[in-house]
Image 1 (cartoon, rainbow, N blue to C red):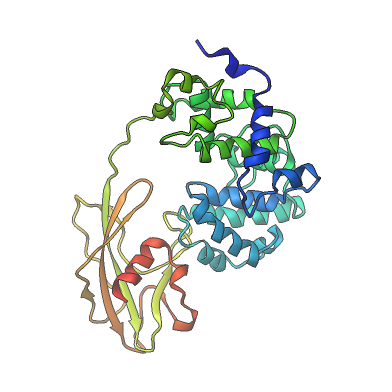
Image 2 (cartoon, rainbow, N blue to C red; image 1 turned 135 degrees about the vertical axis):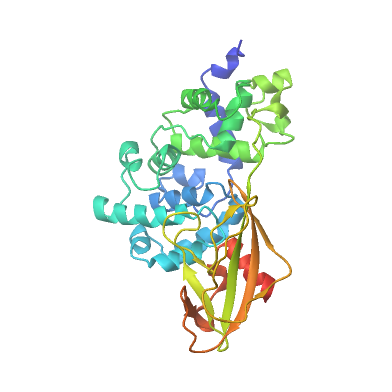
Length: 355
């Protein structure tokens, strides 16, 4: 039986009072004091931050967000940007489908909504790359509409507040019901950020600081001593291992041989070194012809990288390529136009290995 206080009115007010004092400072956030004074959040900045924060930490996102908004301060600026420039700025954030959808969404906002994000959940969720969570976050934070957000922090807070032991992801519908029940009509945008801040700073995955939590009294898991065990999760399956070969070639004038990966698939649209397909490590690598004639030499070390769903091992071949050599794959990029930071992390590891 649930602790009845957990459902009592006033919990959102208690959390908002806490947020007014303890809100984290974010470059994309309007502080609660300014929000009360009438400063409205920029929906573009809210949307951009939420897309960047998916599967990525706040610490990592801050610098990327500052660079993006410095180069493209409005959604119209982003919509007009070159794909390669945006993909280059995104390099290192991972989950590169987000960057492709970022451009599609910005262009849809300009083409279909006059360059302004719609202040409507149903319209937002129809935009490319915006799912239910992002639509709820933009609706609540940017437009103060009472839509419940449910990210990892909020899941943890709801599971502990209500002592929910159903493992994730099966628990998501139940956690969403609880999140919706607590989302207020008054200041829903600030409340959404408050409950995320609570999970990030107080109701943390390990060693939650229950003694300073504004919801410590109604929290059923604190009362029962189960908070450190929640939320429960299904056991993780072992990740498969794949392997492949990449060719890191440099012309004698310093130009690098690079190719843009296909738009669809892993690392889609990103710059990379030509190479083989990535196949299960139990299968022998097929013969992969190098991209051009040269004295390709193996590098002793290999690249190890982990994606969401698998581990990757890459063997590296390097060569100095003669001027005038014709290549079957890729194109040469002059040294003054090449930035290693434009490469996705796994490809940059190869560059760091051979330089």
